[in-house]
Length: 330
Ligand SMILES: C[S@@+](CC[C@H](N)C(=O)[O-])C[C@H]1O[C@@H](n2cnc3c(N)ncnc32)[C@H](O)[C@@H]1O
Figure 1 (tube, helix red, strand yellow):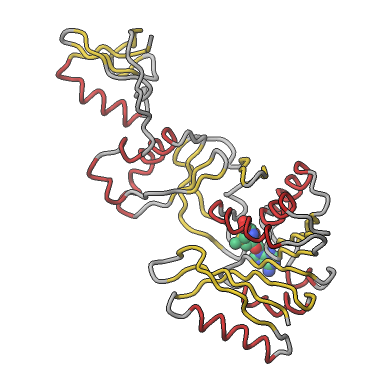
Figure 2 (figure 1 turned 180 degrees about the horizontal axis):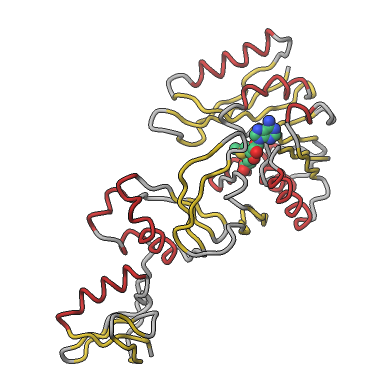
């Protein structure tokens, strides 16, 4: 049995689309027919003067997974083809021409992705790289639990930067970590790199630095929950904190807007033969030259090092990308 509205055939389409707009259409059942009426499955007890009743309606075998199918054809060209899922929260960016429909879009995404909340992302702000997020579906706290590579982590995308698309990169780094290494993550966020490393490798210690107090709070929750006694969270400026730490075998620098400015600080506090994983943004046509020049400047400062691989990690704009560069300390 399903709850439905009995509506005269000629009003069927307008009631169905109004229900859809209101997020009250039951997508788990098919529309039924009874003489001159159609039976529209609903999630409410009354709507637009119609009282809901119980009827036998077939279950919808095809589960709608593409949220765009729930939205008018005229909007589709401008709708994003992907969005980020962090735990049970979805983060989506919208083009200017469809922002006015943000509630409808949020509702369609929330229902097809089974999300608790959908947040509209209007950009990343300041040194702490925190996203500007507005709820467009659901309510409650933006804090959630994200699972990645066998690790559960508390994340609040409204207060600390977190990128679920780096899961493969975090596993790549973890696979490089040898037993007994000392690792420093200079820009750790909620500590996804340290947590994945400790789950898949056996370092001696991983120091996780971040200047955002919210990042430190969430790191501490994640370290405690994961029982990771080899991760040490540090609140402060990476440049000031790194000098207090033991020399590293490996330094992770995931601050693509300005990590290059901190490269000399990393190289000064590393063992010979250690590796820096530097993430930086470049125009595609300039990436190799700019990274080469950066490494060249380190030599002139008396910090010998060499590039051991540059890979384009993710697109940043139509002409630029975030590059992952492995740099060996000479
Ligand atoms: C792009 S996020 C990376 C977060 C994390 N590594 C991840 O993969 O999700 C950069 C982080 O660096 C932190 N940050 C920026 N400048 C910093 C500095 N000078 N010292 C320490 N942390 C800094 C920000 O607060 C932010 O959490």
